[in-house]
Structure formats: C-alpha cells, structure tokens
Image (cartoon, rainbow, N blue to C red; front, side, top):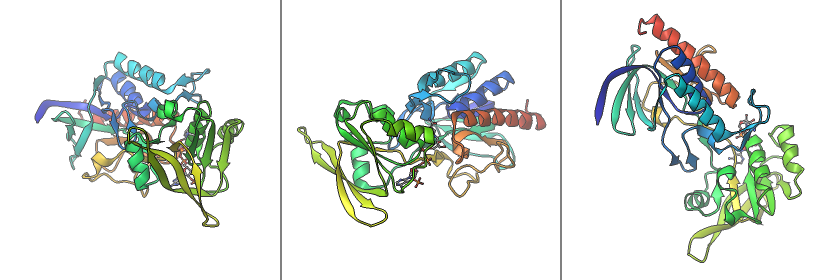
Length: 335
Ligand code: NAP
C-alpha cells in the first residue's frame, strides 16, 4: 500500500457520460482532473469502463449525432475529448472512500493498492443491471449457462442463434434487448409481470413489428431449468412461469434468458461513508445541484438519478458537478 503525496484538485470516479463530461469541464477550468475509469468485472453481469453505453448498440437520442452512434464509439469520443484538455486517466477502481468531515482533503483507496487525496471528489459510477434473484438464474448467469443481463453482449453467441429465447422486463431496456435478439433468435418472448408495458411506444412498436416477437403478459419467472450439455455444463432449457393474476404455473422452453428489469446504483464502495442516499439507494443531491451532504463531494449521472437515467441527462449532471466543484474549490481558496 502506497500513499501519493499530491493532493489532487478533483478526482472523478467513473467513466460514463457524466464522468467524462465532468472531466472535460474540469480540465478546461484548469482543475487537472484525474478520472478513475474502473476495471472490467463480472458483478455478476459485465461491468465495463465506459459504463452502460459500452453495452448499447445504437444511441439514437443524443443530440449531435443525427445518424446515431454506437455506445462504445461514443464513449471513446468522450474520453478523447477529456484527454485533449489534459485529463489524467487511471485504469483502476476506487474501492473505499474516507471523506473528511470538515471539507477536504478526502482520502480514496484504489484497487491498485494506492491511497490518494483530493480536495473535491465527483462520484459518477453509474448503475448496474438488476437480477430477478433466483439461485438457478445466478448459477447459470455466472457459468455461461444461457442466462444474461446483456443481450447486446451475449445475444449473438452461437448458443442462442435460431433458438427460442426470452427477455424478462417491460421497460425500454427489455424492448431494446428483445428487438436486438430478434435478429438472431428464431423467436423472442418478452415476459412481463403486468398487462401493460412500461416502455415508450416507439420502442414497443419496433419490437412488436418483428415477425418472431411475442409478449407473455402477467407472468414472472420463478425458476430456470437446466440440463447438462455434452461437456457436462448446465444449460438452460426452460423457465418456470407464474401467472401474476391467476397464480397458475407453466413452463416455457427457451435456450436463453435475458434479464432486463432495471438497474441499481453502483455505490458499494461508499457504504462505510456518511454520504446520504435516497430511499432507492441513489446518492441524495441537495437543492437541484450536484452537491451531496458532504462538503467537497459531488455526484453526477445514474448513481444519483433514479428518474431520467439518459446519457444526455448524465452528461448534463457531469457538467453541473464540475462547475459546482470549481465554485466550491474557489470558495475555499483551493485553486
Ligand atoms: P425500467 O424503466 O425501470 O423498467 C424495468 C422493467 O422491469 C419494468 O417493466 C418493471 O416492471 C420490470 N421489473 C422490475 N423488477 C422486476 C422483477 N423483479 N421481476 C420482473 N420484472 C421486473 O428500466 P429500464 O428498462 O432499464 O430503463 C431505465 C431507463 O433507461 C428508462 O428511463 C428508459 O427510458 C431508459 N432507456 C432508454 C433506452 C433508449 O431510449 N434507447 C434504452 C434502454 C433504457 P413494471 O413495469 O411492472 O414496474
């Protein structure tokens, strides 16, 4: 374990749209930002530097890209822009934070075993995919057994090609994943717990227009059934469903299950701090700003937004956080 002697003006944790936008603004304000982009991991689904857009095919609603842009390409451009103004980029996680109670500096521990200090910290670690919470689901998700929370990452695998697969969820993510899967699978069944989708009309229509698309209404998945393949590895062959109205149980034969039931904020590394969270576990922000309850600690993007959760709103929050951090550093004579 080593401790750096430099006290950074701003450390940004996370490298999605909010983190990179905060870095662009902070770098242009001569705050010499350092971005901890994180390391790729399974948690239990894939978590990548660049965040959720790394798992998104086409981003069609970010202004400035009239023909759309692939999520990973967009994140690469954000990073290039941040680097152009002198942002330092570090490929590690922040694993623990010790926030100072009287302002600064704050102490951060990295996955590389270093301890660093920063006057201002911007948390922009985003959110990760939720799971149904079944033992069979987790077992198959972590062993390549045909259960995934990311159709864009896994949907094109040979094991799902020309097979019947299912997607759980009724939001835009479920529609996006299901529509993507219709390109490869013989049939895609969306399993939704109500009789009405939450997804926007345009996303619903895009999916339902596909010949191999169907929605199973009022159903939840209560078990994933598997059998060993020729190598002895368990692979899903069916899901057990329960009707949410009648309680009736049934089985649906599928060779893949994609879970798209929303996300949770990535805040585990903050649990030992005095940071305040809202009732859903997102970082609580003060008075329409990026300020948290701790001086010098700001938050931006999906880690602090359970409502809008868009790339463009995350970017806007990143900008706000950099401006708030700059103003706060100035008010404390730290720049
Ligand atoms: P979401 O809007 O919160 O939808 C989650 C869906 O999963 C809901 O339909 C919910 O059912 C269902 N669900 C939640 N927990 C469940 C459980 N335990 N078992 C079964 N079903 C469960 O999440 P999202 O679809 O990930 O979207 C999040 C945000 O990102 C939204 O603002 C969305 O517009 C945006 N987004 C946009 C795009 C795009 O424009 N390209 C793509 C993806 C996401 P209920 O409906 O019954 O609550």
